[in-house]
Length: 357
Image (tube, rainbow, N blue to C red):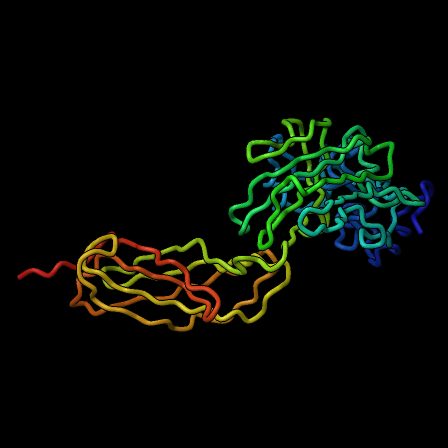
């Protein structure tokens, strides 16, 4: 039950938060403050535009970057421009949670050629104590929109369609957007990604790689985590379940290189204990030219857990060679036995040992 809007005291608030402190500043910044309450201590001296959350926005017509950001609680910090106010606890609800009444996106997944149905509950609840878009002043006249991307890996997703609803968030309980995928070229083995957002303006449906969601302000709906808003899904079995990227090299003098990288997943399920190996070849000239000076067949880097559509960082593997060798380049690649053998990546030494006679 939410606190009343009158007779707020430090004793009442402290008891509600489960702390013995009666200091207003301590109470306003306490770790037990429920960020999901519509009413709570917030940063600033005016009505907070997003119920005390920092929500990332963009004006880019292709808002795919929004998928990487999650809402964060904008607590007061004290001082004239961000005072600690006991009155901010008027109407505070200590128990309401996002999981009780989620306002994220739900998707009805189609088969190839079916209808993609995307709905969003703006967060209208019986007691109206949940901090949700429905009650955020900034979004009162905004609209729910989506952009859909597809590709064979999470690194090559391209825009296929953006569409906007017509219901203003402040005066409606939700929105349903339906997209006929038969004209979008969805193919078994691909990934598709739905990025939901709230848009300051409605926009005309746009398709194709050069299309987008207009240039008005747009804000993400990843309230709890990336997956709470952004939706990614396989169409059948992914063509490439994993891929490697972000090879990096740290040269250690003239006789060694430390190699690291990233293991990425294109799967909609988490992967555990994925075995990664590494192998390399040493060359006497740059760009893998000249003579082969040495080879290392696949050795184990380690076993890694990779989240759905996420990645795992691969630690540095040290490649060394005899001081009598003048190695000018190295070709290296990662391997998942029986699953993936990456293409060789070439690193040219910036310093190398020259033998003089």
